[in-house]
Image (cartoon, rainbow, N blue to C red; front, side, top):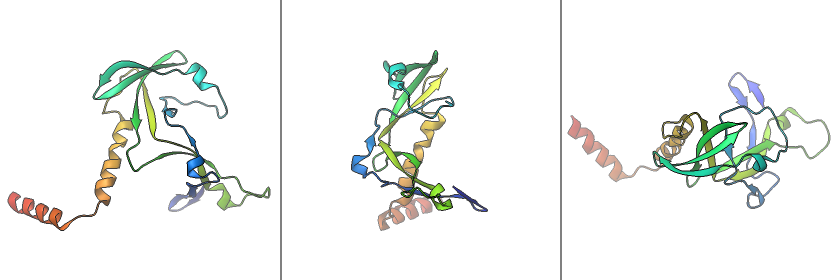
Length: 165
């Protein structure tokens, strides 16, 4: 990433070297854990981390349970809203084995995609007040902000405003 007075800039290639139809689909396998794992490499996670449904529903959310290093985790799986996708990004590798330029260091590409994510808590049940779940409300805000406004919508808003006065 390139740092400037205006922040950090870079590029993300969502097509990557793998066509989107061929990208690995990690739906049902993406988890946000309430901890930091200082390891970056392959691991047989599915052998040790085995989430299961509890049958409990809180705030309309189906609660799952798993254990990580002996600590009980409770979470819920949330679908990525229609029209959006989740992507796993990785540094884009240059084609040539020559030195990578500064531009190459700030390039990212799609490694996998997903359509849901499981958000985990420890010591508390998942609820609609969790910060991670509240972030999903931004999708509906973005949709509302980017929808075209019709003449009827403007007239209705104008009438409502006049009635308030």
